[in-house]
Structures are given as structure tokens and as C-alpha cells.
Image (cartoon, rainbow over all chains, first blue to last red; front, side, top):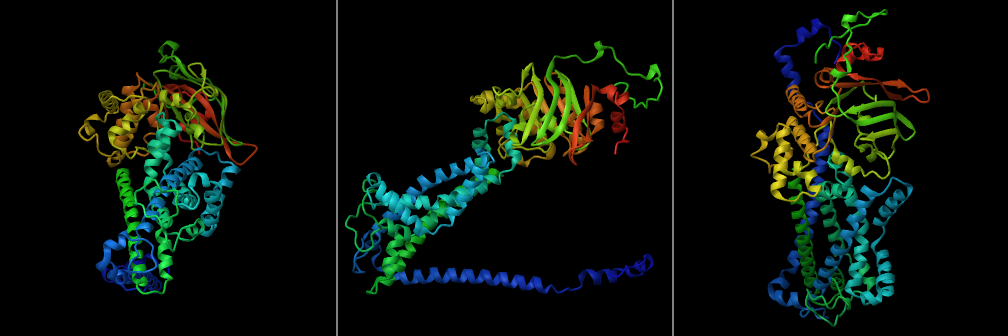
Length: 316
Length: 290
């Protein structure tokens, strides 16, 4: 805008000119381009998702419509028409349980310690940096760790190449991520809440229990959702820990606790094996197994999301 | 307050009639609750406040006034060990609470904070129900019975002049209240643990004038039960409300660029605002400061 004198402003400021200035179309080419790009990205992502899931659902329809019951109760077999995912479901279920029971309490407790109790020292920073690095380590490496420690060294406790060893391996794998996301959620708790708690005469643990954790619960639960989903989808570490892919003799009930120390398999491994088999019927079987795994993961996530929403409402 | 006349002393003797010099029997008398000698507060190497010598008396309202950065908030937070929350904070000198060294390693800060309550500048209600906010301190102190807690909550809310407004919605979230109500809730929360002392760090600066005057009335009502120390930017508020006033100021620190706070004068309020001992006090209250 050129500099204007009061006289010229008086001349220019009429309803017509103001309307022209305020309503004139100014093109925002960069803004529109960005908007178009964002829409395109969203559409692409959704399309990929829909195509992936849709193709699997379509491919699996024959299995679900014809032999759903047999498929759910069947075991690992070399002939597609006899095979089922019962053993795979069992392995994935127990891996999920072990990850929740082991990694979440440990991870949240470690995050609480790092954020609320640990002094601001070099050692604390060192631990923090190392946890972040561990979160980026490839999952196969955790498989080797699991083999060395849980399968070999702790064979007396885990029973060797068992679902217990597999679950513990995956618990260690997701632990750094749980720690990091929980620590972020705790850091986001406003200090005014802590001050109010201390001011009213609370001890440090009471402030953590009554102010920090309730407020951070939604963030912590989101992190645990992601970690659980990742753990239930990992195949490579389980291969190293000894998950069976061809044939597994025993087929106990899914909720049976007694055989946690025996050979096992899990859904990702079953899927990987079946995907590589050229015989007839296996493509449909693979798709069916994928759909089942997706449903299981979505169910686990939904529980965590429900819990998160409940805590978020309480915060209001 | 009577005789709060702003008086400019001449260079010579002051006219006797205008001098405010009450005989000791007319001063509000109370036991000494806090006794500070040569108090200093450091943040790391930086000395934030120095040379604080003062005694806080029971049943009085003591105001801390002064420009920004003079250490009033830092000082008041020493009285309930809230500076412990800051890693680099360090208190030197002696700070006695009823004769006990407050910073003795054997002293439990949690116990101190039950006896010395605090209200903060920005209202900080917990994201819980109104009832749970007020019952927070007593619950942690071991009170479990519902009826006992209900009694405590009601009496605290009455003391904070909030009961009539919220008695029908005690289970609603505290976050839905207005700023003035939230601050009164924080006051109720602070008195719920039955403390001896109430520290108020600029409690009205985030509030509108009407809410402010309600809280000032509140302070006068509960003054006989509690010893109150209030930090305020508002000199008129200090003059209206307090019995004694401490004036802090900042000084340039020869060692660094930062300014260090210090206590300049500590006297009955009427004296501070009509006939202060120190020239700097007078400059501040008459607005010639800065």
C-alpha cells in the first residue's frame, strides 16, 4: 500500500472502495496447491488401505464362507483344505498377554522414574538417549537377544523355544517405545497441577498417582495401543526364537495356561509361511489369516481406545 | 486503614502532627510464626534475593510489595518449601517456623505444606470434581469417612465464600467454573487441611475487580483464624488489606548483569504508606519509581 495522506484516505474510504478491497478475489496459488496436495495424499493413503484390506477380504471369502469353523479350529497342515489358524491364534493371544503384563508396567514405571524422580544428571540423560536408540534397533536383533537370553540362558524358566520366550522377546522389543511415549505423555502434564498437589501437602508418589498419571493416561494408553499392535505383527524375532512354521504337534486350547513352555507358532509366522506356498488353496488361506489377524489387532486397539476416551472425558 | 496519608518528608524535621508513630500497644500483636535472619535465595550461582530479615506475626496479614524480579515470590515460596521443586534453588540464612529451622534436613516438607497452605497466581483447580478438589488434602491426610470429608468440604467452601454457589453441584468438574470461582476453590482447597498459615502469591492478578474485592473481603474475614502472607503488585490492595508491609526492590549486582532482590523496609502498613523509613519505599509507593 502506498503511503497516503489523511486527505487522500478520506477520498478513498467509501463503502464502494472498501467493499472492493475486502471482497476482491486474491488468488492464493500456493495455498490451493498445498490443499490439493494434502487431499491427494489423504486419498492415496486411504486408497492403498482400502485396496489392501479389500483384496484380502475378497480373497478370503471362499475360506470364510465354506469352512469357517474348520479354519478357526484347524492346525498347521501341508494341505490347504485341512489347515487352520487355531495354533497361530493361540500364540498371538499369549504374546499379547505377555507383552501387556510385562512391557506396560515396566515401561510406564520407567517413564515415571525418568520424568518425576530421576535427578537432572548426566546419568539420566545417558539413560534417556539409550532408550531412544533402542527404539530404533531392528526387530531381528531383538530376535537374537531373545534367542540368547530367553531361549538358551533362561531355558529352565521359559522352557526353551516356547511362546513364553517369544512373548518376553517381543515385550523387550516394545519396551523402549512404551517408555518414550509414556515419558512424553507425562512431560505434557502441566506443572500447575503438580504445584497444586505439592502445595496441598502431597508426597511425590501421591502427586504422581493422583495428578500426573490420571492426566497422562490418554497419552500413555495411545502409546500402548501402538506398541501392542506392533508386537502382535512381528514375525522375524519369533522365527529366531523358534516359532514353528511347518507343523506343530500339540494343539491345546487357546486359553490353556499349562503349555506356555512348549513349542509354538504365531499369526504373523503362519501368514508368512502360507504366503510362500505355491500349492492350491493357500492364497485364499493366507488372505483369511491376514483378515483374522487384522480383526484381532483392531479388537485389542479398540479396548485401549475406549479406555483412553474414558480418561480423556474425566480430564474435562 | 486509618491515617494512610502519603506524606513527603522535607529535608528537615518532620512536623510532629503528621508523623505516624503508634505506641507498641496499638500495633497488632501476635506470636512470631516465621523468623527470617539473613535470608538469601540462590538459583545456582545467581543470588535472587538477599539480606532478608523479618518476622511474620500470627493473626496478621503481611503484604510483600515491590517491582518485578525483586524476589517477593521467591521469598514467599521459602515459607512452605516450594522452592524444593526447583533443582537449582538454595536457601541460605535462617528461616525459623515457631523456632524450628524449616530447612533442617530432618524436617519433612510434606508436613510443612500441611501446615502452611498456598494459593497461586493463576488458579489451578485439579481436573476433578469440586468436591474432590477440596477433599484432596484431607484425603491424603488419612480422612476416609464420607461424612467427615463432606463436613470438611462444606466448611472450607463456606470459608471461601463459595458454598452457596456450588453446593448443588459438588460433583461437577471444577474446570467449568469462572476464574474468580476457581480461585476461591483453590482457597477452599488450601484451608481444607486446616493450616496455620496461608501464603497467597498474587492471588488476584488474574481476576477481575469484583472477584478481587470478594477475595479481599474473604481475607479480612478469615484473618483471625489464619496468618496470611500475600504477595501483591497492587499497592492499593496492600494498603487496604494488610497489617504489615514488606517492601522489596532490585539492585544491580556488581558481579553480573542480573539484578538481585533485597528487603528494603518492613513496617506496619500505615507507616509504610504514610511515613516510610526508606526513601526507596517512598519513591515506589508514590510512583516515582521507574
